Amino acid sequence: MGNCSDDVLNLDSLRKSLVREEDTIIFSLIERAKYPVNSPLYDERPGFSGSLFEFFVKESEAVQAKAGRYLSVEENAFFPDNLPPSLLPPRGSQQVLHPRGASININEQILNMYHKKLLPLITSDGDDGNYAITADRDLDCLQALSRRIHLGKFVAEIKFRESPQDYTRAILAQDKDALMKLLTFESVEEMIKKRVEKKAMVFGQDVDLSENDNVGNYKVNPSVVSRLYGEWVIPLTKFVEVEYLLCRLD
Ligand SMILES: C=C(O[C@@H]1C=C(C(=O)O)C=C[C@H]1O)C(=O)O
Image 1 (cartoon, rainbow, N blue to C red):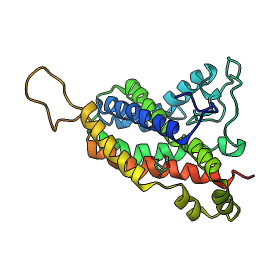
Image 2 (cartoon, protein in one colour):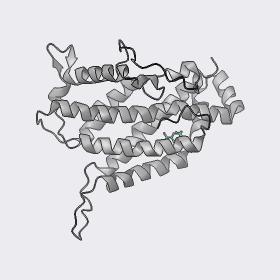
Image 3 (cartoon, rainbow, N blue to C red):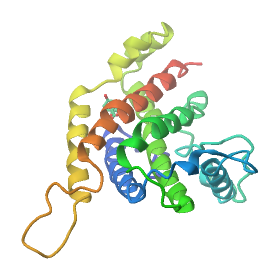
């Protein structure tokens, strides 16, 4: 990504970023699905003030914060409290987003969805003891999902700039339903759900040199990927868009 600060920002280029992000999300799900659910990773553990998963994510985010990851407004931490400062200076890019909306972070909801809904659908039962690598794969999935969903802030900003009058009316009335209606493009959503299902088939099939295609043997169930988008990724992106717009005129 990394082009959200450019002033050439428009809905087409942003949607291209969302399409590219689909690849990242699907590949990360495929990588996580290599391992069983490994549930002890998520259990409270004495000496860790939480689970091994939480420990892994917090420590990883601390390193990434020092290396400047969260200087980018496209990146949101899962445990943003007490992160160390960046050792690199800010990049001084132009502020595209409205400052209040820029700080929206719904990672708690994303984490909850990931653990409760998504993980059981993409992993097999079992415990192979590979907790560190499993946590690393989790973090890849979570960061990709979070980036995609929080890009909703940029989508909302562009939509606002394209029809300021319509949006201003709904924002002044703090009318969430009207905002949701204004920002929704059902045909775009339908296309996305079909495309991610197809991508999951293409990316997740076994490749060998025999004549027989391994059709039907996918590393992540394509209909789960479509459901992930339809039930969680798109609704959460739209939630971010509405939240952003509600404070756009503050
Ligand atoms: C992100 C957008 O806003 C809405 C959310 C979508 C999504 O999350 O994929 C798709 C279309 C819109 O209903 C967009 O218009 O591209």
